[in-house]
Image (cartoon, rainbow, N blue to C red):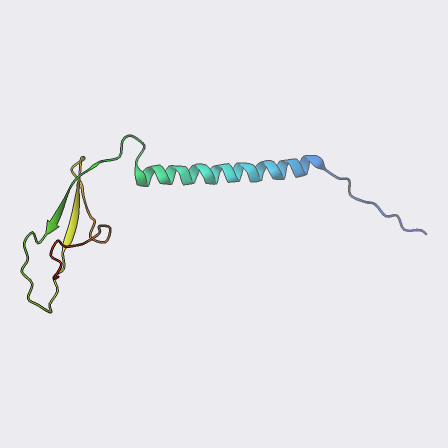
Length: 97
């Protein structure tokens, strides 16, 4: 007896269904990511504006050879504040420092 070889029919609908599922999963991931960004950064509207920067200590007398740590705090229009110490550029008007 001879052997009969059968090939499975190509199913374009299956390929289409898989692609559609993958696209839907990608869309779901995108929307989930967008929702997370909105939760972290707010749902829009104007961002609070920096109104002032406070430096502490305001006055410092540092003996020669020693150092003094300063802190810069940003004060915003919505009443919040944020440590800006590592974001500001520090310099002095006293060239001997």
